[in-house]
Image (cartoon, rainbow, N blue to C red; front, side, top):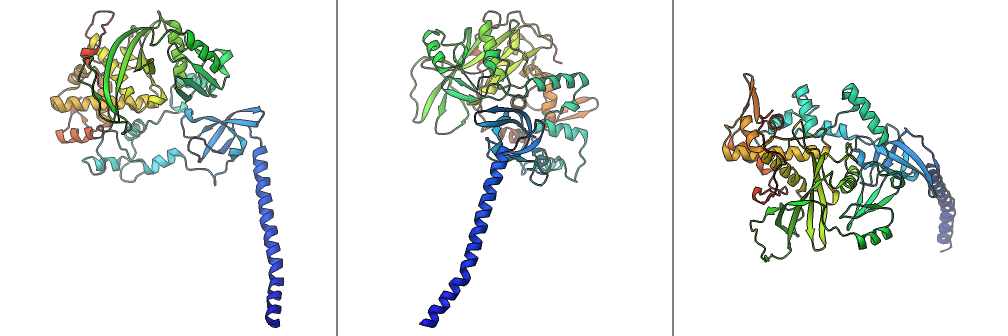
Length: 498
């Protein structure tokens, strides 16, 4: 027993220095970690520096550029732009979420990822098992099967909404774009409260100076008056008499929405009677209403609408000069009034036959089919005017997606219902879509070819149905012309499609 006790004592004596050394090493690493974190949080970065940041929108590290810097009670904050990401994701972050950028720690850029991984899959195009799977594979930039020609590059940029860089623009547009970027590089208002929604903003908006540096603005959802404090908004609500936009109601429709299935396609309710309807469980009746508001007659309301819209639109220049525009306001009808969902504007008289100057669906109401509803309404107004229409350029990235989806669906449905022997002119007359938009859309769908100096539509019924399958899961509000109570100001004058 004594020998055993002596052996155990010897082993303990041998292990003791090792344990002490290990403990010292762990404490040293811990101290260095704390010291490193503290030094990172105290590190000051210069404007224009490239850094790696932990973003708030996906909690991952991204390469970013420092746009601005400010000091407050909590310390130094930096306004960063995430490289290869839209400006709407720019944000103020503390230095504790930043670290120095190095090529080794740089995250893979989005453009490189798309170049390597994303095939040229066109919205509305059959998948890998469909008839065009071979072409989709060949159209992937970076593959060795097919050379990336200018036409393929254009199609790739168009399908993936790759925006042109400043250096690719015309010289006069380059100077204007640089001026725009400099003026709007830092988002001034971070949050707005509108009705029951608190919405993170996306872009800079030129609110009056006394409001421009507020972190949050409170906006009346009926008259769109903006305020700095919630108490002011509460007092305003007691006096505000508006319960709908200050214009004429030109359209109203209803649909049944299943609350158990998010983003379910909206189906037009065929009944127009005022009788109460029996709804199934987990369903509700959604009522939409559209008002036409004259910018000249309701200047303050339209100016407030434009300032609100600019928070979610990058390239928007109409703020205060609203006299020559009409605004079409889409609302959801509730028990206490009409709640703003989105809108589009158009010039009262457009030399270029633009049927839309600006379009916006507010973020809480996106992915519900409201953008398509507004676009459909704009083209229905063009039909009433006896004109073909097109939206004013440039389109935002989300606007581009919405219009491309609308054009694709309308043209495919027309080809399905009336046969593939239609000409471009026939399609334009039926849909009020301009020739150029029809040709570009059919080219992106691989449904048109150029033969002996003219464009020929080349498609079978099977391919049309394959394309249309991709739209089945998308929300779809349709416009019933019989419910549209609107006439153009001037008599229609049919113009030849361009």
